[in-house]
Amino acid sequence: MADSPIVELQGLCAGYGEIQVLWGIDIAVRRGEITALIGSNGAGKTTLMRALSGLIPTQGGIYFADDKDVTGDRAAQILARGIVHVPEGRRLFGAMSVEDNLLMGAYSRKVSRGELNRDLDRVYGTFPKLCDRRHQAAATLSGGEQQMCAIGRGLMSAPRLLMIDELSLGLSPLLVEQLVAALRALNAEGMSILLVEQDVITALDLCHSAFIMDMGRIVRHGEGAQLLADPIIRDAYLGVLET
Amino acid sequence: MLAAQIIINALVLGCLYACIAIGFSLVWGVLNVINLIHGSIIVLGAYLAWGAYQSMAISPWYVLPVAVPVFFVFGYLLQRLLLNRVLHAPVLVTLTLTFGLDLILNNAMIYFFKADYRKLTLKPPMGSVSLFHVVVPVDRLIATVLALALTGLLYLLLRHSRIGRAIVAVRLDRDAAILMGVDVRSIYAIAFGIGAALAGCAGVLMALIFPISALTSSSYLDKAFVVCVLGGLGSVSGALAGGLLLALVEGIGSAAIGPAYATTLSFALLIVFLLFRPQGLLGRKGFE
Ligand SMILES: Nc1ncnc2c1ncn2[C@@H]1O[C@H](COP(=O)(O)OP(=O)(O)OP(=O)(O)O)[C@@H](O)[C@H]1O
Ligand SMILES: [Mg+2]
Image (cartoon, each protein chain N blue to C red):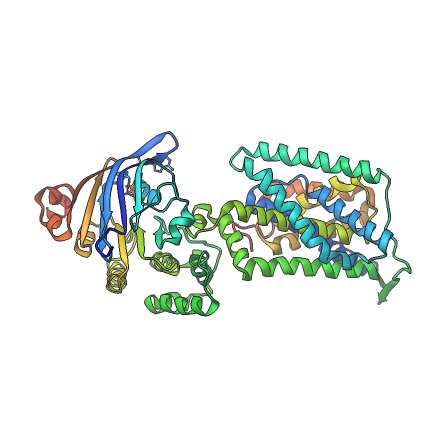
């Protein structure tokens, strides 16, 4: 059990109505690790995350979570397994306060108010900025604060696997560093993380292993450091940076 | 003194208008359904109050605690069994469905209660209070206070309860709410149930003031619609602002140019708002 993947896909196909985007995805996300998902725009990374969180139905293949077949489960059922999706573009509830957003993260957990407050304090401990702004409408936060709020909201769902789509988009390097440090700390406490990230160096540096996607398929898989040294990867994704 | 009386009348009526409109506004804002059965539910609430008083001499304010669960279940089931089936259909389909349901309910009421206008007359009458020559009937005052209380309750529910937060979240971002584990269909049913409960309660209060007949349902629906456009969808405070504005315009208008033109005036105002301020006085995204 300890070595079994927290999430595993076998030949998963998914898309939007008639449009198929994912063509037979095979991945295994290892327990307790940080896994990165890399690919160019339109490769299907967001679609894959949506399929993993049950937001869109699968069109084929099998989805295992903790060795259980969860293919076709609804989003709420997948969430109940501790598989939590922090969506692309943050998708905060803009007119609601920061704290109400965080409480929405815990919506489906049956826990006491005391435990909720403890979890809130934990999130505020990780992101002290959020505590200062707890009564402010989420829409009025800066981009970085919004990302903290989105991750904080995800943490309130008590994740065992935290899936973050586009961690660093639009954020300053300093802030990205802070977020990366926060993720490392969470991972050190045992949380598994699946990360979609445009900044390939940051992603490969942070992750234990990575999957590379192109046109709805997984095209490469390997350890972060190994991929970082791979000339083909460097050529395809880091070309601009080396000139 | 006349001016003061007009203002006070408008304040009293405005709170009642807000109460007529909040359920309609909630359903429109959260489900994106223009609920044409709203007016008939108000009338049904009025008949409930009338029946309770006629047969058992129970005053309307004691009917409210019964009306809330009864109408909530009615609305909840309506949404669960019928409206949830056409959730993703074009807006015309939901409009047609609620229109059809309204026809059924309205005609059923005409069948059972006849089209005659009924009046709920409290015995003995409660009289009126007067202060500086401004006179307000006591029953009307009670209805106003209760209408405000209902409005306040909805505000508290949406702001400070778990279900209320989920209703607001679904309205703001449906997909994100699903990611939080929210069951959208059940939230829709709950929101529709709350809308129906508020409509039923509004009807109970209206029974204290206006004649009761199934034929009045469309005028309640019109009021709710105008209040929503004036105040803006998406907030309890918007419904309150819209209700007060409508009552003021009607009150001042009918004093200045005659009661016959009050409705004309309010619809003229509606058109002005649609043209120049379509979001209403306090309209915004997200129901608070
Ligand atoms: N709602 C949708 N309806 C139809 N097609 C969609 C929808 N969302 C995405 N697609 C299509 O699916 C494909 C993959 O999109 P996806 O958003 O998964 O890519 P991505 O890898 O996340 O890209 P990016 O790096 O730009 O976020 C694209 O071709 C896109 O046009
Ligand atoms: Mg994407």
